Length: 142
Length: 393
Image (cartoon, rainbow over the protein chains, first blue to last red):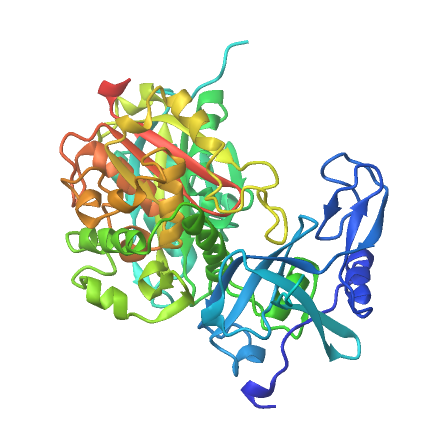
């Protein structure tokens, strides 16, 4: 396989809670853990609420809406899967529920990124077992 | 119960460095480099290496104290302490751990050290090229986010936006290091001055703020610092430099993955500096010279603000080259630092703080009495030390 044909890395967690997060992405909705006792949302998946300490939680559907919290454009190729894409943007999105996640950008030239601009989630199926959440500018009226 | 303090309880008596090399260019094995730096520090202090009875390091240094003790013929090893986590953010931590052990009586003469030969071993801080990502990496690698430059750039983006700080501040930080390196024959970038044009035209590592010259170098070599009690220091060769205060750690959920830290746009020093200044009995106004770890220039900006050396509102005016060089408001990274002297993961900056207080710097600040040296911005834990001359005690 040529250098620029090697695929991007795929999330393949061995730990059950993390596996559930990625499995739920296949539903087309973003899910985060929410504390049953204090209602806090959290990410990354973990067994206990960092706010109130409760071990009780459920997976809750996120609105998928948030804002561009930070970004960077990489000119280095750190993994051969990105050889054809540099320079490319990696972003941090702060969801309406308060949690942040790292993601990638769709449907927006990187020059038009502005901090705090509204974004919404979209999904791309990368392999049969891996669907990745990405973000694009929020559609009008939302 | 009285509050503990290290102020004036421990003295730095020896510093040693090998020749510094570009990454992969050391002719010597890493262990030999480590030994060379320790022997030079002993020579500087005027002691036999057999007097060392304790070792402190950081960032998983590969050269462990048992091997070093055997090689140096040390009769009794009483201390072997590794600062856990934070990579180069442990450089000042290794020194404060050495100081704590001396004050507690665990050891009498302790060396803090770091050795690197990245041709012999792998490069520091490189991402994985694996096809599958697990743990925290599963949430970043699919997006191509896999290097410190990228993650730290995002903290700097948020901080500079929130405080309306412009990019010329970062250029000034980079140029201060290069400016000082031109007087330092130890520096890798000695004889290689940096101009504004050269900085502006240098290639991007990551946008929007990190050009090539905003990023630390990658080097081989070794550095060592010897500490002991003030009583023992009196009989040694150099004028003692005293640790006034030190702090290590980070704030609430500073390392919350991925990018979920509450205090996101931060160098992670916000909770440390008050502790350190209070212990030292000095304030930011007393600092004569600052050695601030440059993994990336944006981290220096945040570290200095979080050490109260300037306010966010003052930053655009303060971070100008003329303010940051010897003779300016606050000389910064007077050896050339991690950008232009050597990236010994921050231990070189601690040595430069000590040289300034001995009056031995190649960019000497006149009458320097208090020197600050901070390690590791934006990682967790970070660490910071403040040193003073005898007259400050």
